[in-house]
Length: 420
Image (cartoon, rainbow, N blue to C red; front, side, top):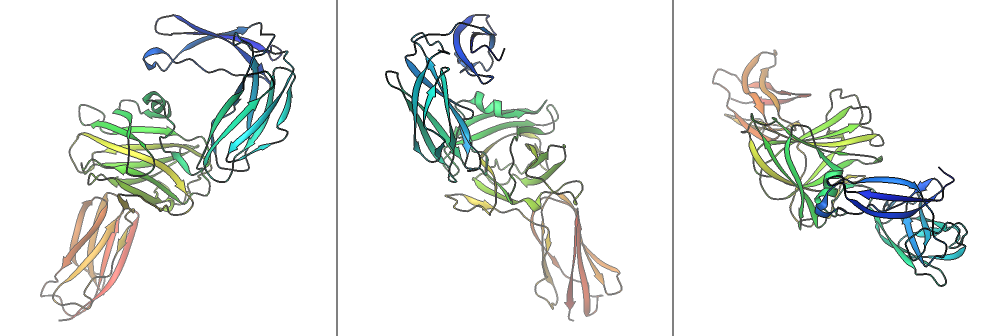
């Protein structure tokens, strides 16, 4: 009932039926606010019953609350900071009439009057973040009442997840989900390479007795419009298997990029958004309309089995990320066919090419009549940089020849000159 200013909420342990705390809390502007008590053993669920209640009469302390506690450094948004008055039995006092004063320490600013009359047991002020990430503390005071302080974190708007704000593995599992039937465990672990102090560890198993892929996913609930690069820290397991990075739009369309899990040292992965593939290459990824990030471990051309990966600092950046503290940068491989060297040549030449994703590859040589004179590569290859030697047969005469590469979604031709 929007006209009831006070409600009691009684909490229950859903595993034992035990009654926990009962809180007498404010119901102001159709918003009911409370902090859910933590259960012993870190149980992630709790039951509650909410019903109208009688509030207190004489306030003794102030309590601050915010719409959100992790704010992004977008100076066009504001956040409501609310102050409530409680008595010595922690009951909200809906009839209290007291003037409170708000003060700010740190980045950002308070919008509107900072000295406000709490005529119905509540008062509020607006907070506007700065353009830079950082922290802020809002302090509220009133004559004769115990004050309160509210700490806010202003996060970088480009960050999707840097794992710094999770207090436990339960928090992590509320943000990331293991897809049905996947064999995977996620946990928070220390991280010292770059991108913060915590990382997400993924222990996976893929194989005939389990699901043939291991999939985890994070929902995305805000816009990253303006992002041109997707980047993250990755510590691979040297398995040679594949990690598919898939980004979904709200209409269930998706774009993907595949990385081979080679080496075991941390790497900083930087993927231009234009390098993500999709079923219809004419469709553009709309970063203002995102739905989810999905990470899939696949067998590739290696064996099934188990492994461990570490992830940190997923973000959509407007400019190519820089300032890496340590580790090597993994710049995505692009499809390409380099000019052979030497050219002109005799008796042989080297041909270098790059494959962006695991796919069938054909590298063929033709003469000026369009007749195939040699087949250099005809097999499935993983992402990477390759080089092959072409030594023409003695039956081929001097002249111009064409080297052609054809793979999934890419084809290119180079002209070369054989001199006998």
